[in-house]
Image 1 (tube, rainbow, N blue to C red):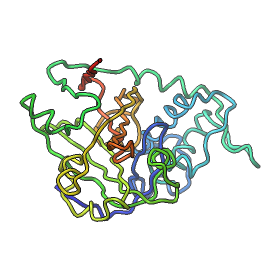
Image 2 (cartoon, one colour):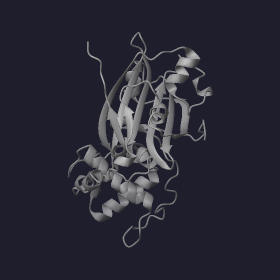
Image 3 (tube, rainbow, N blue to C red):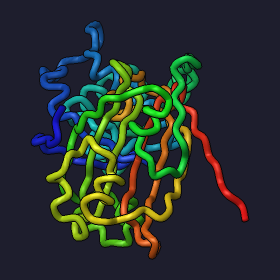
Image 4 (tube, rainbow, N blue to C red):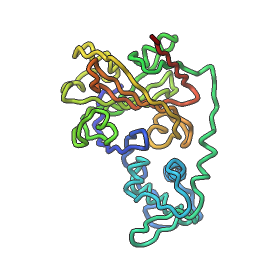
Length: 294
């Protein structure tokens, strides 16, 4: 179990989520510049093609619309640029896209968004493996699972101070140039992944935060080490199609429905303390929400 990750990564957000980067995941994929006709694509390139189809569906791109530039696609899908080049090359040979000179860029020539639809509803719900998660709670997931007679293993994938996307900075009411603490974690019950989490804090208030055990509850670390008490938690919950690093961390096929929970925890003065992007396999998590009226 690691607490730090020395690999350098870049991050860019899918609408609603931020996903990490897998470096050098396509070393040498079709690097000879030959055609893909008659030769099998690598699994990495095939997945990238599917993710581009899925991205077209998510962004509601149609025939005649322009795909993002190669670099933007690599950042969005979180794969290497060589993977994107290989995927686009295969798509051109299939007649799915055409590349034009000037500012026209790469234009969609076939209904690739439609091909991503079937996998988005390919859900095999198994009620025996459903876990309950209480919405807007200050209890960590391990504590919730313990109350259900389950235990999980937490793996820290990355933990460092870095510049984050504008959406996250806005929630902290800070400039986009302000670096934030980002902790990327995955949790599993036995060998079954149950969550992929990205948690953000402002290092100006917690300069030595990364010296602590990042597998522990973030809220408990704040309370025990800094005396910070979370007063309120607000959450936005939506279903998203999985692709990129979250899908890989959860070991789900591209397009599989995932449950995305964005939470913002505040102190008694309404200041943002923690922002979290948590993603769960939709077939295995049940959310419970309660509110006291009066």
